[in-house]
Length: 454
Image (cartoon, rainbow, N blue to C red):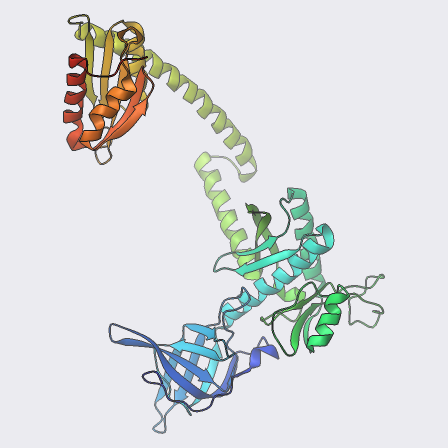
């Protein structure tokens, strides 16, 4: 028996949320307690109850949070915050809290309703969207995840078009406005298998005993909602085996907002928001558009045109900048060739630039070796001193030297790396070893110890 464990009963808790997902307050008795972990003298306890409205993490839906409160004979009241809820392999529900409650204690439980309602809206919204993706597009849901900020459905299709997503979203919100009933019922395992064989169920959980089904009502051919006096032969919009918490009407799902898709292996992941999350996202989007419009001094409706204009201006500016860089490199190369005349039929231009990036010194090196024969460029950039220094070696082709081999031979002992073609190579070296690497390069050149081009 674990330290701190006091066994009282061993029967799994009655799960009150099965009968009433809107239940927020309940009474129960502590049946078991055990220490889950201890960190820095603080313990985390697992508490089991004879009945509970707390939903444990399972089936893609996160756990509930809330409190368990107990009153001592002296009248003192203890509130234990529930930070997590888990289900073990035996079906027991454990409520995690930093405050222990002894077995046999009578408690009052309270669910965080805001969190519970949010989970109900997202989970029921997932059932609705999954049903519509299958009904309209033949796309089957293979997995579902309810996240803290966004929920996702993975569909067994490789792609979805924007028009298809808009169609599904519109249908979902139409059904939300119709406030169709969302109900649940339990069936035997045999009946569930029959429903599966008839195609009314798409999959079954791997478990024995009765199966809990969640149903979203369909419509008759005349358009009457299932359960109404006008309904006759009605097919359910969705019938799914599910142990999660759900709304009682599609109207309680609130707005349904599809946020986007991404390719996940052979499936497509659809991100969506429902209810309060959808409203919060719409508000955030509205605030962002307003801010962007203010920054660009245009109305929100004019943002696409303003962004298109900015992109065009940036492309033009980029081309102009590249032209200016090339002109500068040509001028710079001419000046350096004058400053460093050749000696013994070999010109070595060696420079370290603290204010030029690696792309520029590579361009400069190419201009140097193209402008004058028998020229070697040994250039380095220390623009970002916290990063490795960039080194570029350029060799005029008639010298018969291999710039890539030269660079590797000098940089490797200095803790650097690099390579390239016989005429132009680049690499990186620790800043503190840069001077030594350039010295090694120059020594190899003057000693003619670098392999020639074959």
